[in-house]
Structures are given as structure tokens and as C-alpha cells.
Image (tube, rainbow, N blue to C red; front, side, top):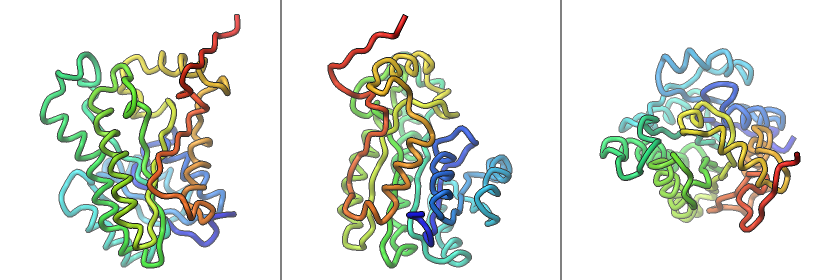
Amino acid sequence: MIMQGKKGLIMGLANKFSIAYGIAESLKSQGAELIFTSQTEYFKNKISDIAKEFGKREIILCDVSKDGEIEKAFDEILQTVGNLDFIVHSIAFADKNELTGKYYNTSRANFLNAMNVSCFSFTETCKYAPKLMPNGGSLVTLTYYGSEKVVPNYNVMALAKSALETSVRYLATDLGESHVRVNAISAGPIKTLAASGVGEFSKILEIERFRSPLRRNVTQKDIGDACTFLLSDMASGITGEIIHVDCGCNTVGVKFEPKS
């Protein structure tokens, strides 16, 4: 029960197949008390039954794409829940119609929106996190290997994730003096609502499964347990890191053939 007595926020729960759900399950199993945010009333209603699995607290509205929304949500949390020990940022967005074809066809509007929602929202989250964590704490965001290598049909999301990873290093430095740690998990390919917007994603899953030394794809539990560790006191000396949880899919120079 490494999270016993710990209280935290999860931003980005979409459904039971989302990475955020796997993280919530792991955190709950280790004794954490959880709070959730949702972008709109519509999404709040969609996840209300799921959130009840983890407690009876009201879901906080927070549209991270708009100025002032994160600060407003955090003020509400501080008033109704009190201090937090951790925050999980599981938020990203890009127009799926522009996640195919050539990257240079990305529109200016989609580029800016992807950067705003997928990267800047975490920067702003970290800006206001210390007032919720006067005794220190930990933040984890989620990234993907497309930030480092070309992944077909990932396009502008790759740029957003690259910016997010760089942000993690700078934010870790900024918040270190407040005893707040900042890390990212680079998860291997996994079936989620967001992943469904990436063209030919099923092929990526199949290829990565055979490339993996563990001969399988990463699971919600794999990512959830790794995130729980990073948020716990057991990882008190880890900050500014991009932790790969991918069953070894990113191993360079290794090729496995499927069994006949």
C-alpha cells in the first residue's frame, strides 16, 4: 500500500480503455484517494459512473484549452478537497483527419491546438501545482516514442510530444526547489480512444508485439503500476525523466520473427 494516505488528481480519464483508467486502478489498489477533472459537462456525464468506482467525490470541470480554467479548477480542489500529493496528466489532442498523409499538410490551427492541449496544458498544470502541494509532491504526464522516431500517421502529435518531453525537464528544474517532482511515461502502443485516431494503428500494435523482447504489447496495468511507482515516495530521487514502459519495443537492432 505504497500510496496509503496519499491524495491526488487524474486529468484525462475518457473511458475504461484509457491509460488514465489503468493508472487510477493501480493507484486505488495501493491506497490512494482520487479526484478527477473533465473537459465539459458532456464528458463529465460520460465518465461519472467510472469515477464512482474510485470514490464519491464530484468531478471537477476543467477545459485545459482555455485560459484560467486550470487555475480555477485547482482553486476549487483546494477549497473542497485540500492539499494534494500527486497529479496525473493524461491529456492530448489533435484533429484525427490530419493524422494521415504528409506531416507538412498540418494546418496552422491544428498545430497550435495540438501544442496547446497536449503540451502547454501540462506546463500550466505545473505552474499551479505547487500551491496544492505545500509539502512537495509528484506529477506524471504521458508521452510516446513518436517523439523520438518517425511513426507513420502520428504527424503533429509527434511534435507535441517532443515539446512535452522537453517541458518535463525544464519543469522538473523549476519545481525542484518546491520539492515537487516531474516525470513522463513513454508508453508503448496500446488500444485507447486516442490511439484509434492514428491511421493503421492495429498494424503498429502487431509489429511492436513481435519486436518486443517480452513478445507482447504493453498493458494498462504495466503503465498504471509504473506511474504509481513514480508518484510514490519510493521514487523520491527521480525527476525530469522520460521513463519508457513498452515491453522493450524500442530496443534498437533487435528483430524477432513471429512463430509459425
